[in-house]
Amino acid sequence: MVDLPKLNFQKQIVDLNLINYKNWLEIIKNKTLESDNLQLLDKFSKLSTQKYIVQIEKDYENMELGLRLLESNINIIRSRIEAEKAKSDRSFQNLVTVVGTGTALMALIDDEGKKCNAITEVIPNQLIVKVCNDPLGKFIGFPIIMIFVLGCLGLVLKGILSKLS
Image (tube, rainbow, N blue to C red; front, side, top):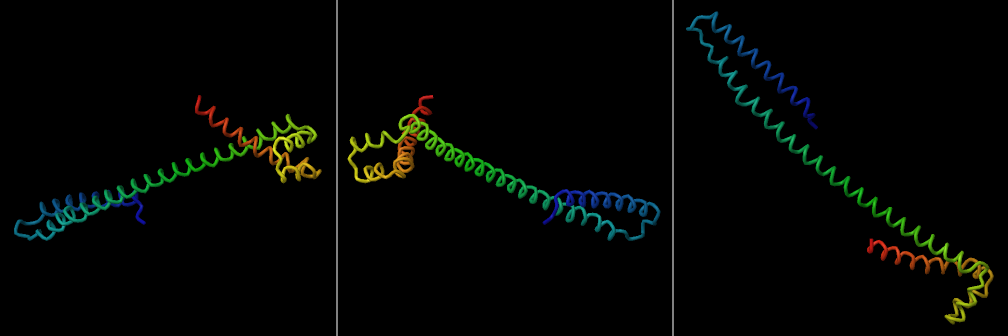
């Protein structure tokens, strides 16, 4: 890969050498006879100006354009990463909302698992009855289910409130 500052530095060196070459060529022309044929040296000077300097300038312009495109792509990728990071942060916040809301409401509602039996009377589901009759289910399973249900309710409320504000 070509380093653009180095390429620019090399162009400046070629420019400086070409100027020195032309100055020395003028000095030589002034000290020689007009019959001396120095056209070959003039051709070299013109060739350097027309071919090499122009080529270096065009290469530099093309590479600089490529560099700008790469920088633009890097900035696009950075913005996509930031958007994905923000999305991930929102997902985590939603999870915290679900668990936090459910846990807080369960702590307020069911201190000793008493509400489990009340819910089985309202919703006579075999799974809920089984969970409520099992001591482990009453104190762990049921609260986890309720945390999820109440947390989802909290998430819905959060969405509604965010749209209102």
